[in-house]
Amino acid sequence: MDVDDFEVIIDVLRGYRADESVCVVELGSGISTLVLAHIVPQLHDNAHIISVEGEGSYAQQLQGQIKRYALEDSVSLHQAPYAKDDDGCWFRKDALRCILNNKRVDILIVDALPGPLCRRARQPAIPFFLPYLKQEGIVFLHDTCREDESAIADVWGRYFLTRREIDTPKGIALFVFPVKADGNVKMDHGQHA
Image (cartoon, rainbow, N blue to C red; front, side, top):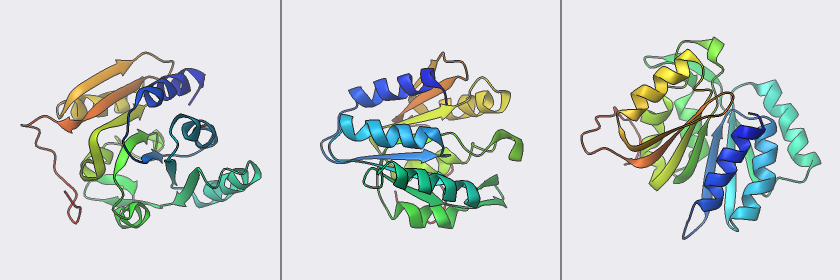
């Protein structure tokens, strides 16, 4: 993510109102993880970021940076390996379930899997995460200037009541829960509703 993308996300987070703790889930970690871990707690007293990374060695390097900058109280970094299943290539769902441990998600930032791994690699995020999203939860899909992510935004847009395209160099689509009453999103089996 670059500066324009961060500004959009931070502006939305600044305006996000929560009565209790704020849970931000970031799929795909990096510099964004460090920036979010520094800024989000300043915007919300009871905020925590769960960052999920598929590459083990990269997650290990980033964990060192989190410790170096003393951000352990703001962010927990988890490694969830990539796997192929009927939905394509995505994070291992059993690993994600363990990481989430039935937490309710306020903000979901989808910036992984890397596009080159497989076609429409980020598409399974919504069917998996819908049962976890809080009422008025917000989903960001990053890189919508790319063909696959643009197509994913179109698919997700069929289900959400609110969708906004945000003009940044890489593109961001923003969605707000709840889904449309007639939205027939296939839920991931084994999830809570």
